[in-house]
Image (cartoon, rainbow, N blue to C red; front, top):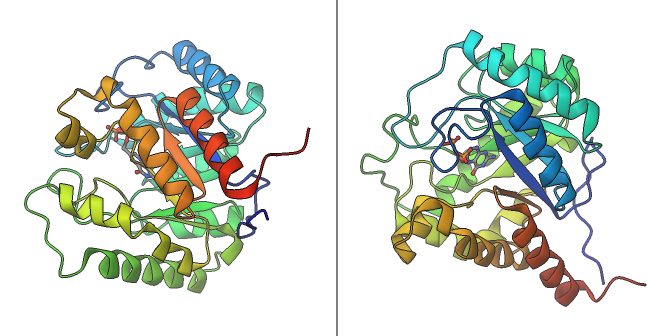
Amino acid sequence: MPTPAPALTLDLPLPCIMGVVNVTPDSFSDGGRYLEPAAALAHGLRLVREGAALLDVGGESTRPGSDPVPEDEELRRVLPVVEALADQVGVPVSVDTMKAAVARRALAAGAAMVNDVSALRHDPAMVEIVAEAGCPVCLMHMKGEPKTMQDDPRYDDVVDEVLGFLEERMAFALAHGVREEQILVDPGIGFGKTLEHNLTLLRDLHRFAALGRPVVLGTSRKRFLGAILGVEPAERVIGTVATTVIGLLAGAHVFRVHDVKPNFEALRVALAVREGAPPG
Ligand code: HH2
């Protein structure tokens, strides 16, 4: 029997793949490759051909140790790419930003969703932008700031703490006029977490279903996979695919990945096992 996903204010097939389009010079695994708008557009089109049902466009790296990007620079990177993709790809485009002005301009340029890794904490104006737009917003857990988040992060119980944080952020959003059907949640793999914290979150991912909202999982090519496998980011694709299957079976809904084709194929197979083969 198909498992129904929580309703969203955007017509998204859940579970689905969110393809990453990083318009940055310094992202940890693909920095500089898609900095030119034409390259980013071609990349986004390719990810959709490969099975992405959603694209996530970001102009600021949040890798451990990264510095913030000024607003005008982030806008310069992101806007032309959001506009071109929204016009041409035929799937919704999400903007990965912590800045309200970037979200506002990206929504006006055709973005349909906001992915805020600060969960509406970084910019006090963000919650209003999202509430007014009525668009989906991904609330992600991060301990600290990207610059210092990997400096000895500690938790009493990482799952309880991340769940409690997401509950609090959901309550904050609802209190400011965001509707429940707009909200997605994300445990924030790699954001202020040790290898053991990341593994515990993946092992207990099923507990996030209790929040009643679609769960986003971002493991793609991340450092914890490198710690297990001893390989560089570009070689962490198979490790990422393993986490996609684990995530699907634990009830996650949106898989944010750089390598769409292998993750989409793994997702389809895992889905067929979980729910039976699709007709035809
Ligand atoms: N991870 C990254 C960026 N945005 N958003 C959500 N919701 N969940 C994630 O896990 C997540 C995210 C980091 O990956 P990437 O964009 O490839 O790297 P960088 O921050 O260096 O650009």
